[in-house]
Length: 94
Image (cartoon, rainbow, N blue to C red):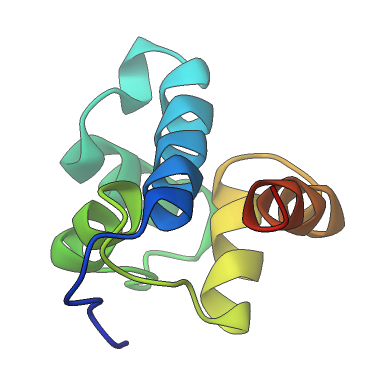
């Protein structure tokens, strides 16, 4: 995970996309902590799949997600990984 040092508008928009999708899952997942813990239990057999810091950095546009993280994140968001990647590419290619 490499934290981006300079502001990148596209990365911020991607972070907003991820945050919006998380919040759209309902009030149960509004907080990042709750989202991580609930999804760990529900989808990842209680295994840690993302840290709070990493999720915060992704949603604030400070990190690019790795391919593995993008796939896990898509499952946690209940979206098709290919569709999520397509949405990210649309933002990236603007």
